[in-house]
Amino acid sequence: MDPLTVIAAASTAYNAIKRGIEIGREIQDMGGQLAEWAGALSDLDFLERRNEDPPWYKAFSSSVQQDAIAIFAAKKQAEAQRNELRTYIQYSYGQSAWDELLRIEARVRMQRAEHDHRRVEVKDAIVSWVIIILMILSVTAFAAMVIWLYLENNP
Image (cartoon, rainbow, N blue to C red; front, side, top):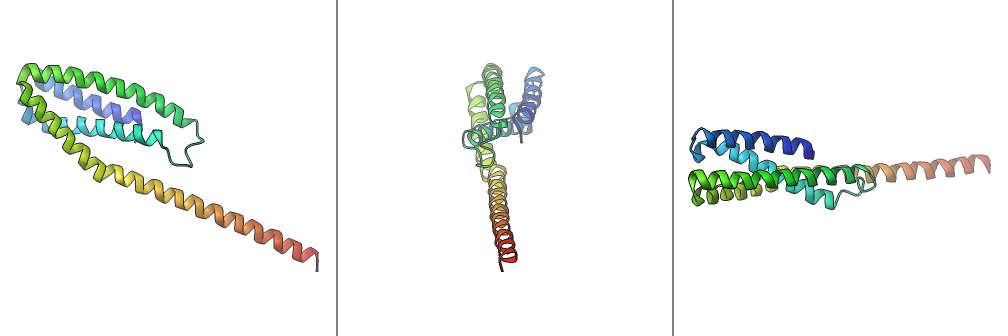
């Protein structure tokens, strides 16, 4: 999950929603696209939170700064999409349709947080523990080798 992929998914869903509105489709018929767009926005928010507090093994990487810039640009693009979408929906379907979209977005955010985002957090935790265990084993092996060499050379 990277910012460019997430904003590409959001833009694809956004364009499908926009086309649907232009040809007069009902907002309920675009539920899949609305959920996809809301999911991409949720992923973008997750990436932003994750980038603010990256896993310790990524904190020293220069990609954190690059990701921050990409996330910022994607968030601005998503904000523009949201504003334009709000105008389209309110004009074409009324305030109640916009409120419905906000409910869909809230539901998708909760689902993503419970499933997809939690899975990423668990994966990060597993990677962290594996790295820590490998570091401990490496230090232990090095110390054992030094002790063995010392004992071999000094009978």
